[in-house]
Length: 380
Image (cartoon, rainbow, N blue to C red; front, top):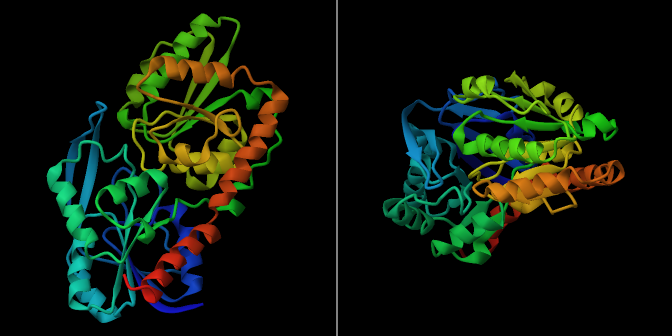
């Protein structure tokens, strides 16, 4: 056990973060999690804290629409916690882990300046694609925050390049990707029929950022060019595009099934009943469903604008990569995916699961602990 008191400042606890936080809690003398809110309006699951030590702060929440240069608009929520400094003074942490570059991290830097013995680690869940077009003010604010940071956690290589581009030292950047609960998702076996091996699955918000519409347009064209093929696509999730998808006219050879939101506990069964995941995001700092699907043995038809795809998907080994803003790129990936025989698909299923388990909570917790020890053993 690491004999340190660690405060984690974050917005809320999604279910896929629970195993990692529990692993950290077991390894640290004390982990206290300070949340800005219980959850956000666009989240489909209920809050769950298990046995973690959690305090929910009173916060102001600002909602706005942000437009990405790739043409989609996204509703975002900025939470401004009101008691952070007071709570940190009472807890007296040795290390603060603070998520993202918003108000909670600014408040953490204020506390860090008041308590020089406390180390500050900024958990930067960013990628080069998500940060396109953020503006000069945000750039200079982040550079200022990083001057007070003793280390930075990033999801992968893209996040590391972005942070290094802000002038932060590479030897103080540690990779801590999203982890996947291997015990939970290994409920799904690798045994699949030829029908389920060819069944496509999409899981996520039905919104423009996720790129489902351009993917469907490419899938329609591919089916018209390959009239002997039939594809079944299951869509799990909800959002502003649901009505458009419900009314969509698709080729006779495409079966499009919309299931709406599904309880988190039922996801392994949904993955089990399909053979490939479609993840055509236009920008994602990770893409948790990629990790989950691969842990269940699904190769991924995925966009290179997802950092999870960049880190986990190797063409013709664990899936097929494409650019969502390039129609021909999507079509070529669909062609490759549906040209693979059943035996090769089973091999890819095993390879996908093996790669996903490289990101289990114990491994990610190791990297976070390394960052914490770095701050206490090296002059930061």
